[in-house]
Image (cartoon, rainbow, N blue to C red; front, side, top):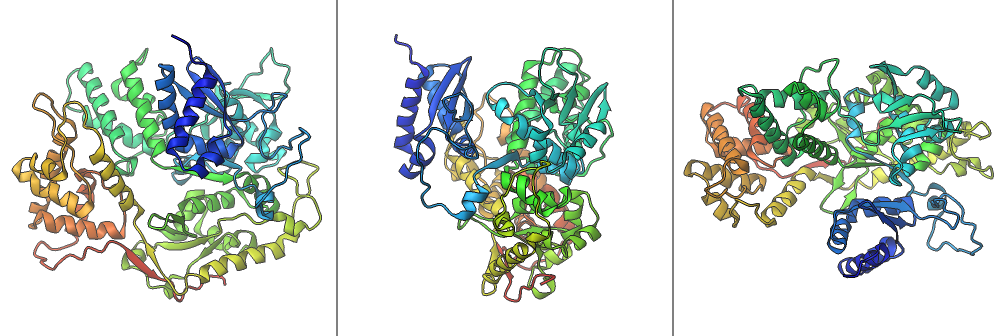
Length: 628
């Protein structure tokens, strides 16, 4: 049989993708890609720039991996790299091509030419929880981003995460000066005889005797550590589940079962719990499992695999955060924003509402707790946030709505939910500098913008306020994006091929497969929350999602009975609260705590019909930003 080389395999993949994709998307992102190599199960592909790599990874990685595995008849890992020039150097859009060709940019704008919004740093959205939970300071987060960006290209090329890194490669993305960088290194924390900075994400290593580089050596984590609070939640769940077992083998089986169960749920279903956090709380799931089981020595492969799957599920459950290079390298140092101010802007941009109905990103974020919550996320006081709102450099990015002039839901008043209007684009610093050259990063020879930005910031603030006036004659419908996700997940779940040991069928057939006392609850889950029940296992199988649903539906029936109301009334009351304070619902257990709370606040004899609104409408006709 003739062997297929990597170029031939890639041509076949391109042919298949062209059949399945819209022509515009294929021509823009896929057509000009090239295969570089296929070694030791790693298939490397070159794309035209960093943003194209991100686009391909986020949308086509699984499809391409499946196609390559079918063609090459082996397991394949796909890696996308920025295309190389003839000398073998990586070429990004930021670097000038020197091949002598005359290139004319069409349909470009001065904003895109200067800002390059496709040049981004991409982080797991989970990383922001490290700030929100207080596990990292904004300065530590900035330092990690700088290190991560400095070694990311080598990491993608399969060269590991230990490198000699010059300080200027870090500082240009870490939003700090050389002096500030070395102050951070001097204050490294020692743990178990090893030095760490950036909240434990960067380890300082001894000098390499065989290296001619004058740069220091570091080991850099690409993915974020778990927060201590989330680690404590996982540990508490595991400890509770093995509480009644008698032997170590039984404990291991229970831990495996619990890890698999947590992986099958979305992280939002179970991870947001208030727990006591220990000072020496492990930050890796494997370390947590070792401590729970008292395991020493080599870690079993099945446990290791289950831990990795849960970790991937947690990281994937919070999406991605995109930060432009221009914001980190130009805007922050030019406007002299502090690290806390910069990350407040990044967080609010990330939390801006996404309207699933229109598929567009809105320019406002809803934050329960308002200014105090934002202050907690970035490690400052509420008074500091109030002062920031009066600073032109910060106020150009963020405005706070005056709730007294808005018709908002009562629930938002009780939870002190604030509406933040957030400027999504970057201010063009070149406008402030006029004919002066804009230079990127923190270098001694660079000219930083000081008072020259005043007129620019006023223009940005006017632009933000103009965007707000667009809402003056509209009602902003705050669509529950969690609800949209739940519907999509339910449809996807129903369309999947049933696992071995399960029966398939329509939602009606699945409902009738449940015991008679559970069928009403299963029907209500579909009718009220649009969640389809799992298929019933065959007679020779045990446990699984079906058995879990039976147990949880009966638990909800009992709680409703304890308060003297029907299950339907209790679930509709829960749904009313859910519309006001959204959370993910993918199984009956997700309703348990909220149902108890809402039933406790309502008398058992209440018989009025429950209003099942599906959205809130916030009237912004009289919106006036504070400080306007």
